[in-house]
Amino acid sequence: MTTVHSTDPTRTAPPPTADPVIELVQLARSFPGPPPVDALHPTDLTVRQGDYLAVTGPSGSGKSTLLNLLGLLDRPTSGIYRFCGTDLRDVDEAGRTALRGRRIGFVFQSFHLVPHRTTVENVALAQLYVTSTRRERRERRGVAESVLRRVGLAHRLDALPTTLSGGERQRVAVARALVNAPDLLLCDEPTGNLDSGTAGTVLDLIDELHGDGVTVIVITHDPGVAARASRRVAILDGRISHRQDTAHGRDT
Ligand code: ADP
Ligand code: MG
Image (cartoon, rainbow, N blue to C red; front, side, top):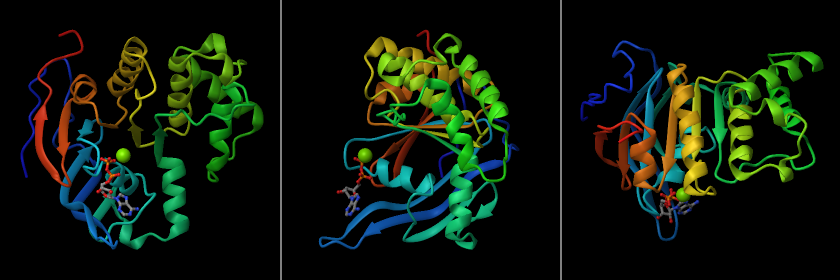
């Protein structure tokens, strides 16, 4: 495996001793077909707490396959996936659902907000899926408000998604992803539906969250977004074929 060093002083690398959030050992996914497709060839990858990784590659390179595996939406054909030290081969479906709800925050290209619920309700609702956190309704609202303040939407709490701009919608989605304090923020083409200016502000926000210690993986077909967003970039082509450190910060 390639060793990755950060050459960018503006982006802090996690210490090599930071706990791994993700460890893939020869993880692979094939689809039986016909015709059979090796969508993800055996892949090794370690992502540590505080890391910020972008995965990029052209259409058909396995990005969605990898995302679905990382997000516990799909199972590998072979290999090992350890999430926060737990070997997922030992976890049943209920356990996977619990991990997905409590420890992974998802941000999608198309926002996936509930249209007839306000901003604060959309964020508060996400706490209901976490069965181990039995927050009172008022407490849920309080937590949702504080996360929305963090993403710069304190003034839009009671707005409906249809009245928000694309960038605001995506910030609501980011707030919703963060509300259960996940170990990992998994972003699938987070700027795919945004114009480039708005995309920049969403990437700035993700950057800021990373600065606060959130572990982030951004999946994008856009190499420009990958380089701008992350501290290190993995290039996918059925396997991770190349890694590079982003040697420049957001200002260059
Ligand atoms: P990307 O997201 O980078 O465009 P995908 O992960 O969607 O790539 O696809 C990788 C390869 O796996 C492609 O050749 C695709 O056709 C194939 N593939 C993806 N999902 C399935 C599936 N459910 N059944 C069969 N083949 C699939
Ligand atoms: Mg895809």
